[in-house]
Amino acid sequence: MTFKEPVALVRILAIATVITILISDSRPVNASEINAAGWSGAAIGGTDPVGYFTEGRAVEGSKTFTMKWRGAAWRFASADNLAAFKANPQKYAPQYGGYCAWAVSQGYSAKIDPEAWKIVDGKLYLNYSKGVQQRWQADMAGNIAKGDANWPKVRASLN
Image 1 (cartoon, rainbow, N blue to C red):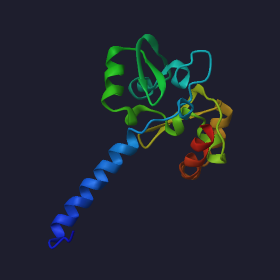
Image 2: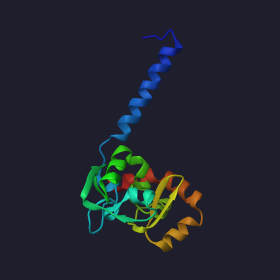
Image 3: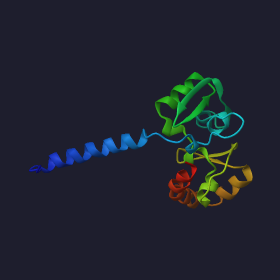
Image 4: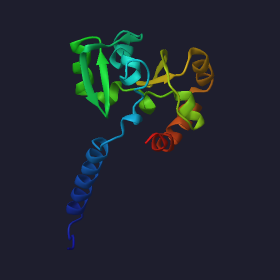
């Protein structure tokens, strides 16, 4: 098969790119990729991820407003928050599967305290404790860069 027109090749490459993005985002994942540890068995300890953005604080989710996403149960404080997450989960889901951002920046995973959080550039980051969060915040940009680089390896170790 030959492509005489560069436009046809560009279209095919664009379509292939879109398909690759869709496939990678909908891939089956192991539930351990989402931090669902703790008493609740729900993602981020049952805390409503949307609440961080809408109320500026950790808000307890309800079993009434629950959905499965990426192998974990996510809880929400209201039907509106559930609907917002359903419409755009990547916007509200914490980075690094909800594991401690400091730990991931150091190359391992750790549980989190839902009260130790920060939104940076529209992304939610959680930490093990407020003390660890202070360490992470001392060089947020550097720790985020390290976390982003380490996350694929850390995520693979969870499976």
